[in-house]
Length: 229
Image 1: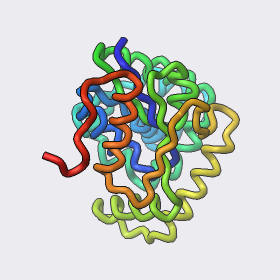
Image 2: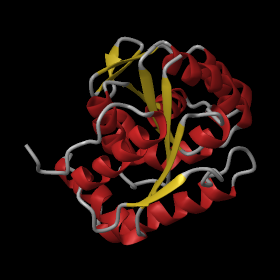
Image 3: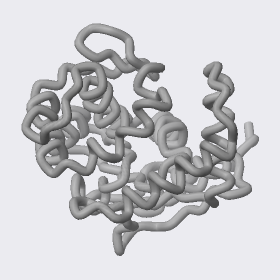
Image 4: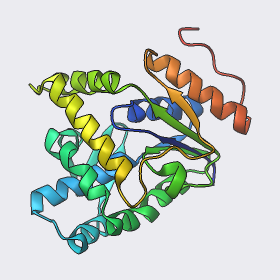
């Protein structure tokens, strides 16, 4: 198995975008664990699944595929559907079900192990539960207001009319749920490097994390500073 990079952090910290860019720069694959849980949540909403056993069964039978930024679930493109406000509001509850987390644990590990060069995984318990022995652990965070602003911009771009105040409220509610759940709560691993992206550009955050990876695992020469040719 290649190098495993775990990027954890709260909702709206920019994990997905950053993880994709970090993977591209290092020549690693990216495993979008958040999308995996969102797919289970989408199925739960569509099928009216509420019982733990039914949710776990859906997780075990999950048939999904990643191609670039596109997520396919049972043969259909759900890239935008899994980012809807309905899924966002329900995913913490589904993710907190122990049976669901257990069912998806090996799925996440398998997807990472399929790539011998290395993999970047982002989520909330990658460095603490999924890959506690990850080569590099990063806890990516930002202020509540910064995360709300980013998430609101994404929603507006997608045609949503949700106000930034509601987005901020939703983020804080999800933070509380993720940090307070009994199974795999949101917490920085003891050996994780904390990266606060407040006030930083995406390029600066990516540069910082790529530098951390290369320093820890000797992955080639240091990356060029953002904007350098």
